[in-house]
Length: 134
Image 1 (cartoon, rainbow, N blue to C red):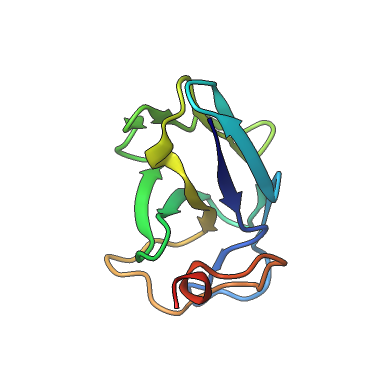
Image 2: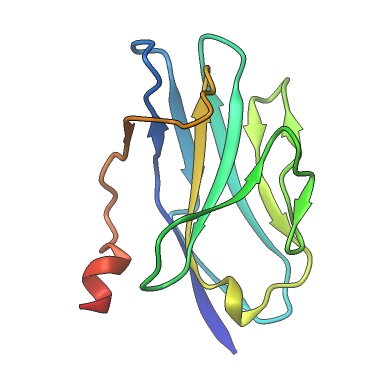
């Protein structure tokens, strides 16, 4: 059985500093057979020390934190090793499940607050899950 794992190209967390943050996430769309490994690539540019996150949004639900660089090495079979020399934070899972279908968002910030305020999202080419559920 195939199920879509959709990804949004860019998510930038704005934390008060200007300009020097960017995220590149590939592929934009991914179809993976159940039980197969999956991999989503995330590379970034940031002026300070990078704080890295992967968020997951199941269909018709709110986004939720899946992994963060500090404190969560693995969650629900997902891992995302931080390669500082390649400035990458690729998301991997050895065995995909139907419940993994959804929207995946890679995020970077050079500052982390207890509550990250002012998150903005650069629109992608895919339709949002909210629109699909109405």
